[in-house]
Image 1 (cartoon, rainbow, N blue to C red):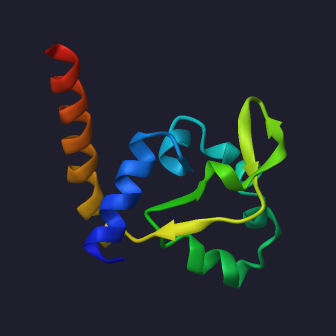
Image 2 (cartoon, one colour; image 1 turned 60 degrees about the vertical axis):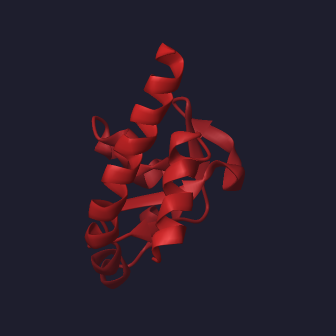
Image 3 (cartoon, rainbow, N blue to C red; image 1 turned 90 degrees about the vertical axis):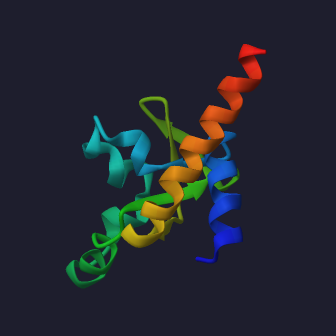
Amino acid sequence: MTDPELRALALDIIEGRVYGTWLLRGEPQYTAMVFLPIALMSAEEFDRVRHYAHIYEYVSEAGEMAVNGKPTFFSFRGITHEDWAKIEPMLDELVAARKAFLEK
């Protein structure tokens, strides 16, 4: 992803427009229930997906049903470890900016 695309994604994550596996860290068993295509993948397809740092999708793409309060998606996107390493400091920067704004 390009830097502007990563910055836009970081902002979308902070603003709650994106749901990703980083929100399921304590409950990884929900990954295939939230991102339904994963449950239907062949072993070869799954091998490609498991190399992503995270899987995510825009909340606007969520299906109508939920699993234990978590959205379900019929599609997903992946972010590489390289791109995730770039986006983490952007997320920290956005959180710090919000905190500084609230402290004024």
